[in-house]
Amino acid sequence: MVSTSTTIMLIGLLISVLVSLSSAGDAFVYYDFEVSYITASLLGVPEQVIAINGKFPGPPINVTTNNNVVVNVHNKLDEELLMTWAGVFQRRTHWQDGVLGTNCPIPPKWNWTYQFQVKDQIGSFFYFPSLNFQRASGGYGGIIINNRPVIPIPFATPEDDIILMIGDWYSKSHSDLRKTLNGGKSLGMPDGVLINGKGPYKYNNSVPDGIDYETIDVHPGKTYRLRVHNVGVSTSLNFRIQSHNLLLAEVEGSYTVQQNYTSLDIHAGQSYSFLLTTDQNASSDYYIVASARMVNQTTWQKVTGVAILRYSNSKGKAHGPLPDPPQDENDKTFSMNQARSIRWNVSASGARPNPQGSFRYGDINVTDVFLIQNKPPVKIGGKKRSALNGVSFVNPTTPIRLADKHHLKGIYKMDFPHKPLTGAPRMETSIINGTYRGFLEIILQNNATKVHTYHLDGYNFFVVGMDYGEWSNNSRGTYNKWDGIARTTAQVYPGAWTAILVSLDNVGVWNLRTTNLDSWYLGQETYIRVVNPETAGNPQLALKTELPAPDNVLFCGALKKLQNQLEGNMVTVPLILAEVELMGIAELEYELEGGVTN
Ligand SMILES: *[C@@H]1O[C@H](CO)[C@@H](O)[C@H](O)[C@H]1NC(C)=O
Ligand SMILES: *[C@@H]1O[C@H](CO)[C@@H](O)[C@H](O)[C@H]1NC(C)=O
Ligand SMILES: *[C@@H]1O[C@H](CO)[C@@H](O)[C@H](O)[C@H]1NC(C)=O
Ligand SMILES: *[C@@H]1O[C@H](CO)[C@@H](O)[C@H](O)[C@H]1NC(C)=O
Ligand SMILES: *[C@@H]1O[C@H](CO)[C@@H](O)[C@H](O)[C@H]1NC(C)=O
Ligand SMILES: *[C@@H]1O[C@H](CO)[C@@H](O)[C@H](O)[C@H]1NC(C)=O
Ligand SMILES: *[C@@H]1O[C@H](CO)[C@@H](O)[C@H](O)[C@H]1NC(C)=O
Ligand SMILES: *[C@@H]1O[C@H](CO)[C@@H](O)[C@H](O)[C@H]1NC(C)=O
Ligand SMILES: *[C@@H]1O[C@H](CO)[C@@H](O)[C@H](O)[C@H]1NC(C)=O
Ligand SMILES: *[C@@H]1O[C@H](CO)[C@@H](O)[C@H](O)[C@H]1NC(C)=O
Ligand SMILES: *[C@@H]1O[C@H](CO)[C@@H](O)[C@H](O)[C@H]1NC(C)=O
View 1 (tube, helix red, strand yellow):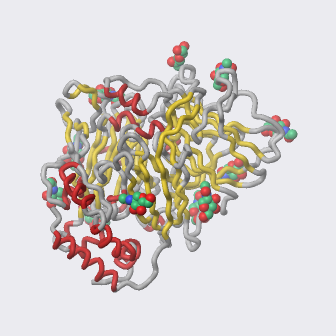
View 2 (spheres, helix red, strand yellow):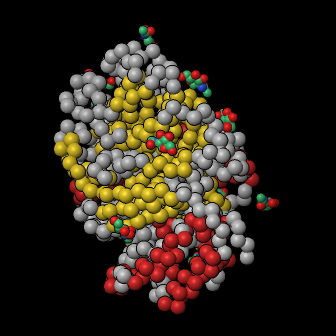
């Protein structure tokens, strides 16, 4: 229980800090998201889709680094909702991360306002609804974090920004897909691939008539930035554009060594920026293709997204066969070698004026190691579940840090195993005890038969190695200690491992999950809890590394009664806090970081 005196003390503290502030606020950018169902015929039959402000995909969040982003999310669904901002760090404010370990869900008919500052990041990300398999029904949209004018980018300013959200799609609703999984069955083959919420162009007779497809209009002789996100359920997709090179420039907030690809494998949850030069003769329109990868191309033919690239001087429609995917049926290393070829441009500047390369991750000593293995689903207590290291995650009824603040015990355990457990898997709220400012090595070992992709909230991590077989101590000898890409979502090939390094400099509790929606739903996730031990009993110091719970924080689970009290006091409580809020958390943060010394 938070006592009144604590609350008053906290408010007093905030005001005293704010009084010492100079001006210098960072700009606020406001969005209003009404999340509701619409009916749309994406693949030829009407179905239920989750839209934002009536649109699918939702509107892009297009902001500049250091902006304070305020998103008022109105839940017009018939079930609980949380919006998560995948890849956006939420520095010091896991309270805005939008997953069940950090937030109580927004009940139907309610709205809740997220507020966070985008900081230390420039690049391409996306948002999506994190609960109840909702992403399979849509509700997603792109996030662009632009550079401030003083920060140069390592290429000429493109003619325009084009967002492409690609992903596999099931015609069944997310609630039906949930029922399938709850019934112990697997989802089977998707019904198609959508590009920006639209079905395939009729490139041949295998595609039914009357499907609305996406067209990207361009002018000849220009360079465009394509921001491509795989927002699907789980299918790895090969992305390519007929007769065009894709010059890879950015991966989830890091600039890459710029290289041309004729096609690139994009796994569930991953984001890439390509520079597309419109250097062809426009004798016709060109196909944009996203096709299922590492599956039998014949049986999975319908799982192919096709959009159109149309030059303003185009002489006709696209025709003929689609450009070929990589012909690597007998070469399982092709895709992995391509992934290894993606490297960080260590001399390009990042979000802050210091060059990215000044952070030499290869010289930092690892403080803790986790070898995390997934396995194909198994039955636990009669139910089909998925586990990591033998633990199938059960979401806490009360968000983890909220439980900490209210001194609740028994909500979670910090005993996530360092190695795969032998013996029968169990269902638990078991999380990782992260050491603040520690340097964590995580080896992800994939024992399943398809690609799994892992995402970590709150951080980007360095992808330092991947290979087939079982990881061993000797595998460290193969690590890239110099220019491994820093990203938020990494793939692990079946029967292979991927090693990542992460610097735990962001206090909070951060979700580590399989982005494959079915495996995630069945329990393949955990959290890394990072607290700053120096701040115990020193709230002023604590503010530097972890912002207080926002005044609109929702309560649930063991703290449900606080929500009820709040509603009883609707008029008074928010008014007191509103005064503090007026000054702006961002200004507070700015001062604490830059100016105020104590
Ligand atoms: C994002 O905003 C910038 C200007 O701040 C604009 O140039 C760009 O076209 C916008 N991108 C999208 C996809 O809306
Ligand atoms: C709900 O939306 C209204 C405006 O439509 C806003 O004034 C209010 O602060 C929002 N509530 C929350 C909890 O964000
Ligand atoms: C890396 O970034 C620098 C600085 O912007 C740029 O000059 C250089 O061309 C980039 N290198 C590659 C290989 O992309
Ligand atoms: C349609 O195109 C696909 C991919 O290019 C090809 O495999 C298939 O045989 C074609 N089908 C028909 C009916 O032409
Ligand atoms: C990439 O391909 C384009 C042609 O599409 C070419 O002009 C450019 O030089 C290539 N860039 C690199 C870095 O290979
Ligand atoms: C345009 O390019 C294609 C292939 O790149 C070529 O086959 C065609 O003849 C060219 N058309 C014109 C009008 O130059
Ligand atoms: C792909 O599936 C087709 C049809 O089921 C089958 O004939 C073919 O042998 C399969 N190809 C491979 C490489 O397994
Ligand atoms: C890493 O550890 C070694 C000894 O194990 C030590 O000599 C070295 O100074 C450490 N490096 C850093 C950067 O702390
Ligand atoms: C978590 O790790 C810290 C050291 O970083 C240690 O002091 C603490 O006892 C650990 N807590 C648990 C529950 O293991
Ligand atoms: C791997 O290294 C760790 C310490 O770094 C050691 O405890 C373990 O025994 C080693 N394992 C093998 C198989 O050598
Ligand atoms: C999964 O693990 C088992 C036991 O260690 C091993 O025999 C099998 O080859 C592994 N499969 C994959 C795909 O890694």
